[in-house]
Amino acid sequence: MSNTILSIKDLKVNYGGIEAVKGISFDVNEGDIVTLIGANGAGKSSTLRTIAGLVKPAGGSIILQGEDITGENPTNIVKKGITMVPEGRRIFPDLTVLENLKMGAYLRNDNITDDLNWVYDLFPRLKERSWQAGGTLSGGEQQMLAVGRALMSRPKVIMMDEPSLGLAPIIVRGIFDIIREINKQGVTILLIEQNANMALKTAHTGYVMETGRITMSGPGSQLLADDSVKAAYLGKH
Image 1 (cartoon, rainbow, N blue to C red):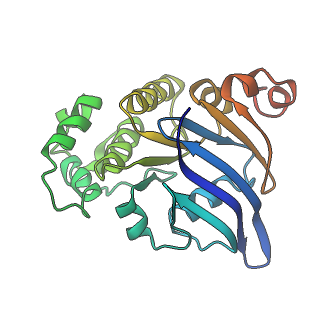
Image 2 (tube, one colour):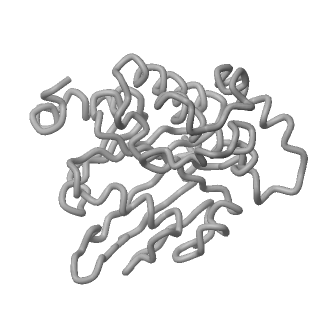
């Protein structure tokens, strides 16, 4: 049985008077890929941003390996082992690929060579372009760079916010192949993704979010076969 590495309990997130997340609870087991699916505005990104320390929760708790990290600042969250690949990639366009990757390791004071080689093994394209400015890369390459940068902090849990957004279908398949490979190498992944079909095919466990609440959960394959999930989220795939 897998150990729970990240536990979200009764999490509430408000923006002004609006309840974006209305008391959700879910667990992420060590070594798993877990996905949150749902329509825009369901509260998925708010959940990730709160776990990352970018938004203060209105209630509930976030537990990482038994330690309550609720409300910690983003730097401490990264130090404790959670990193995020943000929606829209958010790389540093004027820095080289190598400089972008080094930014991912800015909190470390040990030797990063092994991790740099690991990222280059995962993404040979980045090695080829290591001296190129990040902003000159294609969308797919920028997404690889954003994932590689997050891996450089040597995270226990990597969160990915819409990794396939704006990418061509063939590139999306490649990104999901990489997600599986990173997971195979021992990294736990929490994923939110508009492409529910790919997300559920990839994830060990899925949670369906609707208007700030979790309405369904189960193995990815089970949700993929569920008629109500098919009707709501899989019609286009």
